[in-house]
Amino acid sequence: MQICLILALLLARSINGFHLTSTSISQRCVRSPTKVAPLALPVRLPGRLQISARDLSDTNFDLAVIGGGPVGVSAALLAARAPFLKKVVLIDAPRASGALMNEETGEDLSIGGPTGLFSKALRDAGKKISVTSLKGMGLRDDSIWNEIVTSCVELASYNSRDVLRQLEYAGVTYAQGCAAFADSGGSSSLFVTASDNSISTVSAEKILLATGSTPFRPGGIPFDGKRVFDSDSINTLSYLPKSVAITGSGIIAIEFAKIFKNLGSDVTLIIRDTIPRNALMKIGLDKDIAATLVADLVSSLALAISAVLGF
Image (cartoon, rainbow, N blue to C red; front, side):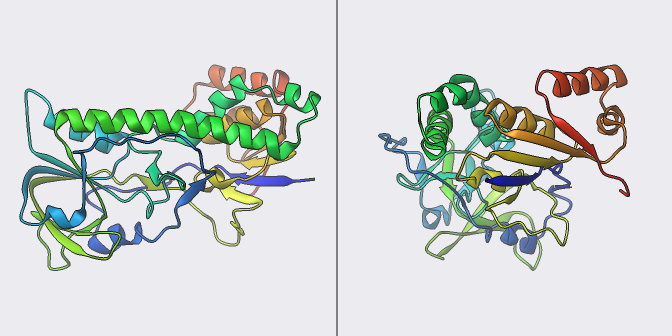
């Protein structure tokens, strides 16, 4: 029986302009990329949008945005469009930062996507695909999971292409590479390292850091990407699990609990309180809403909720 454990811890370390140094930005450029099953879809990216990081040198911009997530893309579009009409460059390193990638096409599936893009796509796939019906037809679990992943990749791919079209029409320059400030100080220029290790200098009047955050990983927990995952690495799950244990009582944990229950897995939600309602109240939910949510989780989804003491 295949069992997996998801550490759905809240994104505990926000990264912002007051905490980032050239070292911490560079560290985000050595994470292993998240790979998804290849999908044979025709790809036509906007022809004038993406440029090589090498071509950025000796170019002055009004605004440089580091990070191609929802905040970075929205900021780049807002600045480039009327009434501001600023000259904007968007710098992103999807492979280095662990973004969803279509390995067959090299397409960045997560650019401009919402936080938890994979979970949103997985949730929608669970609504469209009846795992019970497919199993009743005699399909094996690996075939069912491939169908689910294909649906996720299609949804993410359509979203990313739409974002790229918007960036092109707004006149935003898009370059892939790892950005860092100079160790000597100063914030008017950036060093951008391309995939071929070439380094270019980008000058900008304003620089926006929108590099996102990463899940907190407690020591002593073997995150192996096979049975133990966090809320980011769960993207690499390669099978449909029979049962799932999820630690945490936040929005991410609850979302994945409902997703995997809808996909037919036996789900156990492990919380840090003897009373489930109190665990939800700790993240800011109203006590009545928390009580209603717990009742829904237990009754409609038949989830097992276990308390963990000592935290």
